Amino acid sequence: MSEETINTTEVREQIIEILKTCYDPEIPVDIYELGLIYEVEVQDNGDTRVEMTLTSPACPVAESLPIEVEQKVRSVPGTGEVKVDLVWEPMWTKDMLTEAAKLKLGFF
View 1 (cartoon, rainbow, N blue to C red):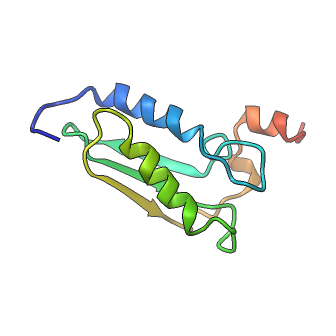
View 2: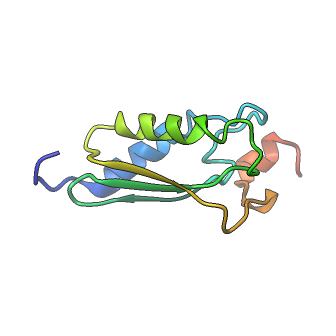
């Protein structure tokens, strides 16, 4: 990406929309609604950092899901360098589900 300044809010919104196309294969809810995405940070030059977790360290997609997230974020126009940080703190719990995800999974 060049030294141009981008609309970071718009790029962040587009990133969130594309993250909603990523699914944990064991749960029929996208990773954003599951609460697996802790932070999406977009700099003025388009460099982007995504902080995410998984439902557990033993998750079968522990190696592939962060790669999928990185590839999808890179496809968003306006992004520069993309870094995905996989973190384990705070530990994911069902409380991190959005209201829509709780409804879809029958937690109400």
